[in-house]
Length: 74
Image (cartoon, rainbow, N blue to C red):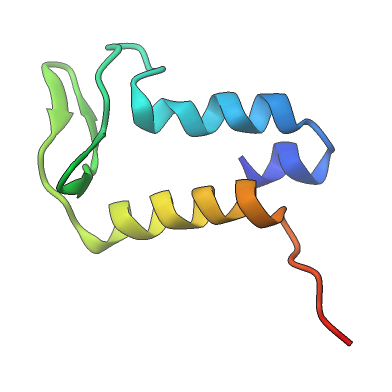
């Protein structure tokens, strides 16, 4: 996703972020009230909620909000 932002392809980055919210091959959301899940299995979401899933989701969200390289203040 950051790759698309660095290329200036914000629309593609937003589509990549939507993978977490059900725009994936199983049309299964990987985020709910308890946080993001680890990934997809052939039968649906892997309900494990490891730190890696949370960090991946938060870093992707932050990149969309701030851009790939946050501006440094004066």
